[in-house]
Structure formats: structure tokens, C-alpha cells
Length: 430
Image (tube, rainbow, N blue to C red; front, top):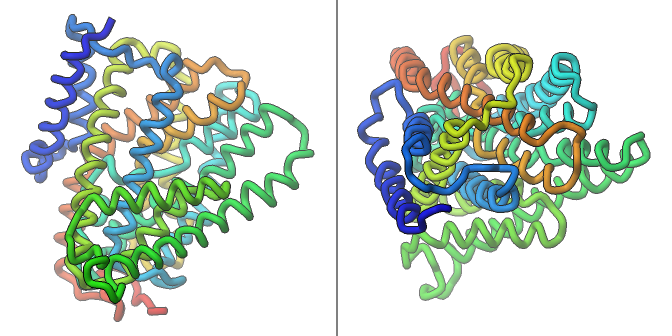
């Protein structure tokens, strides 16, 4: 049995840690997510009657909690980006989405099928689940506060943040493909999947996000009635309202709400780029995001501590390590050949494909819809190990790598009129 009073106390302690640790760990090769993960492992090893962190037994609750965390992180990512959307300005992002993501899915699915002997549906699901990246789990590689200057985002932080903002939604069609393989088999489902799950739902997410973002941007900054101009009230919780509104309305018309939330955030950001209200919105959403992430990682640490990785075989661990050490770095590098990032930036972008909360959400969602012919405990063990390895590897290396890269970049002048400093070739504007 769990003790509700103890749960409240631990929740409060986790919130205090989420508020205080970032400043303490700012210059250390030790991230807040890693601290929360280790704290959860220690906590659940103590003889206290805390909540049992079982993702199989509590699948529905985990699905909705991670869903909320993901949509909030997507709003934060979109509000933080200072660079306007454009084919050339976002060149690295499009390359990562168009090449790295599908190649990663195929490679992970192939490794799962070959090494683990999983059915095709389960292998495709694992590829889709581990495809989304999550820079929230290593704050040094994400864009910081929104500022007036469009050239404030360096290529590494911008690319990793914008990639994560979009690939969280773009993984959904592959998850649906895995579900179709598990439930119907054959190829009869492919036409409907391409038309509905790919074309319609992606377009609905993009168009819905643009429409909602434009309406909210006008309400925030440009409405003629001053008492309705929300930017003048300076309430940060409006960012949370925008998140849920964009997500809920888009999901009601069966579009991809994850895409809609990120597009909404980018559209709001573009509505009035120099207004201080952008910083208020981003600051509020970042605090909520950090709090939810800390709590979830405490639970993930507890899951590991109580034996959640027991079903993990050495082959499953190899698949996860191949993703982090081989598949992502190689596909990330190849996708950027001829792109705007310089050699050092390209290497960092390729390596820091961080896995996190999005992977936990997609697995919980899919397991609530279909049976994939693999024990759920084994699926959770492989995905949890991939997230654990990513948090450890990237959490330790992010600060020194980015500090070194920033020092090298400071010695060079901006290489394109848009202003992003790079050690690569000159970058054209849109």
C-alpha cells in the first residue's frame, strides 16, 4: 500500500529539487534529469511504502501523464525559438526530419527483428517509439529564453530543439502503422493509413496549429480592445491554456495535436517577436515542464530500482546502445552533408539525439491499443534502458561539449546574414 502523505511530501521535495538544482548543476557535467533519475532509484530502494512504479499495471495513467508532459514541452520549445520558419533557415531541421528520423526507424526496427527476433509489428513499434528526440532531458543542448534577436539561436541548439518539436508528432504515423500490422496484418491497411494517418492528420495538425496560433497571437498582442489584449495582463498561465486549446481542438478533428501545439507556439512567437510577454509565457511553461519531468524521472528511477530492467536481455541492451552510439550519430551526420552546419556542429547535432518522455508516451499509447506479440515487460525494459542510457550519456557530456563548442564559436564571426554563428560555410537566407 502507498502512503498518500508520503507521496505528497516526496512530490514537494521533487518540486524543490527541480527549482534549486539547475542553478547548482549549471556548470557541472551532471544534469537535472540525471539527478532526478538517481534520486528516484535511491528513493525506491528505501523501506518506504511509496507508489509502485509499474508501467504495465498503470499504463493508462502513465499514458496521460506523459502526454501532458510532452505537449507542455512542445509549447515551450516553440515559444523559445527565435528563428523564423523557412526552408533555408530551418535547413538542418528538415534534413533531420526527412532523413535521420526515417532511417533511424528502419535501422532500429531491423536491429530489433534481427537481434531480438521480434515480430514485424513489434520491431516497427520500437523504431517509432525510439525515433522522437527530447532535448528537455539535457538543457544545455536546447534553446534558452526567447529574445529580440533572431540570430540568437546557434545551429546546434536551434536544430535539436526544432527537431524535437516536430518529430514528437511525426512519429505518430509510424506508431499507427505498427498498430495496423499488429491488428490486421497484410497490406490492405496501407491506403487508408497513407490517406488518413499520414496526409490528413499531419495537415490537420499543421493547419490547425497555424490557425489557432494566429488567432491567439492576435488576441495576445493586436486586438483593438486593450482590456482583451492578454499581453498587457502578463499572465503566464495563458501559455498552458494555449497548449491545451491547440491540442484539444486538433485532436477533436482527428489531427495530430503534438504537431499543432508546436506550430501554435511558433506562430504565437512570430506574432510579436520583440514583446516581453513571450518571455513570460515561456518562463511559465518551462517551470511546469521542469516539474512534470522531474516527477516522471523519479518514477522512472523507481521503476529501474525495483527490477524493471529484469526482462532486459543483452540483445535488447545492444539494440538500445546501437541507437545511441551508432544509428543516430551516423544517420544524423549523413543527413547534414552539404548542409549549413559546420563539422563540429554537425558532430554535436548527430550525437545528441536524446531519448526521453516522448518514447514512454508512445509505448504506453500503443500498448493500450494492440498486442504486439512481445511481453509488455520486455518492451518496457528495452525502451526504459534506452532512455536511461541516453540520460546518463548525454547528461554527463552535454555541459562540457556545449561549453567547448561555445568557446570555439566565440572566436568566429557570424557566417550568414541571419546571424547564426557557425564553423561551417556561409549560410544563405530565405
